[in-house]
Image 1 (cartoon, rainbow, N blue to C red):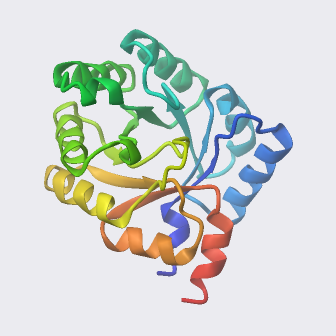
Image 2 (spheres, rainbow, N blue to C red):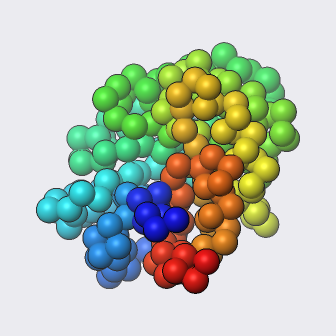
Length: 221
């Protein structure tokens, strides 16, 4: 799998991220020709400035990390991020509403963000650590109806969470792929073996802060 770099969204979303750390992220993304970088919304202009002469996509997060913002706020965040230079949007699904089986709300919440970025890639973070297998499948079905482009496993912010699991990614892929949606695995992807296993069951994107280690590790597989 010589082109694993093309799967990687090099990620830095920690609360205390500094500009020095972000500049390192950008340089690594350019050096390894990663698909994209994923940063918090306030750093989108900084990413745009530093990646303007590259093909690296700028990805940002919406309603992060809880997904509990009202839909109007998520839509505003999205439009603001696009205006600031974001190429792709990763929104957090409203897990509470999904748990309460308020599926109409969950779908309309995604549709509000979809409406704010009609021409950009939209990924929906399901937060699989908090969901049953049936809830993962249902969330995927809602994302299909709401016309998202990808479903994504995790924020990486759930306490004691595992993040991307091979079995969860397979459920997601099997559910959405017949409808043309793709899967982004994220959370806990730290080595080439895990990355390869996730790709083999259907992941077409990998959100990870360990992109360089994964690329280097792949040479030994």
